Length: 318
Image 1 (tube, rainbow, N blue to C red):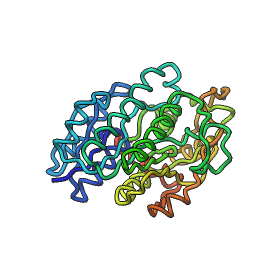
Image 2 (cartoon, one colour; image 1 turned 45 degrees about the horizontal axis):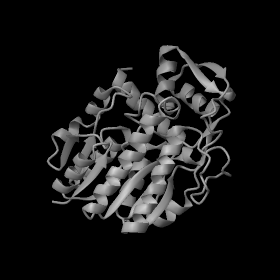
Image 3 (spheres, rainbow, N blue to C red; image 1 turned 90 degrees about the vertical axis):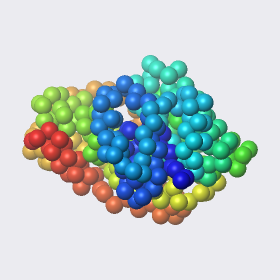
């Protein structure tokens, strides 16, 4: 039976996608190396339901292992790949450029190589809104040069995008690059702003806001991202770059204010200068994704944060 491979499938987005595809009756293969960038136990908990699913397999492997990735693609009869595995985190990348290069560039090449050797029909390759840097006019459009990355994370993801194009050009591989915009929701990564902010408010700790909270982010709820991925899986496009973002940036002060209203608690805010790695704004022009794959995000930030807070309360017994 043909399979869909999800690299990084035990992570935040990957586990949501794997659950959705398995529920839809798709044969899913999750590959993850359970990297300790954040607690691997959280990732194992994410995929626990898949362990008992008759249509899912979980394989512990590293995308830097070329032979193992090729074996998985061959033995599981993989026909479509959602490549989510990566070293994430902008600020962590500042001091770990060799690691990010090995995983985000070298690992992506291994996935692309296995795909082209074994006739994979379509690769979805996850990228990032931070590719646009700080000089792209807003809202961000996919044809912007995106050639001034602010940190190694963005630079390595952009390099992976360009390498994907060569595989389309040389081998006819269908690769759709999906630039995610500030994804959040239940089971989110503990190092990301939404859960760190919730933890701080609930525990009465300080929240650090850069530049007085004036930085703006285009928050996109995880269910909308998963819906976009599912739609993209049905649409080989040759080589395309698509923005998957809600299309409405919020200042961080607004973000915190919504959380204060949800929790009924005041945030303790510390204002600090923004690091050189942080763009002033992320803002998706999602018209191309709407046109080509029918992307149609439904969850605005206030509703998405309300859902996230409800999940957080259940998890922590609040």
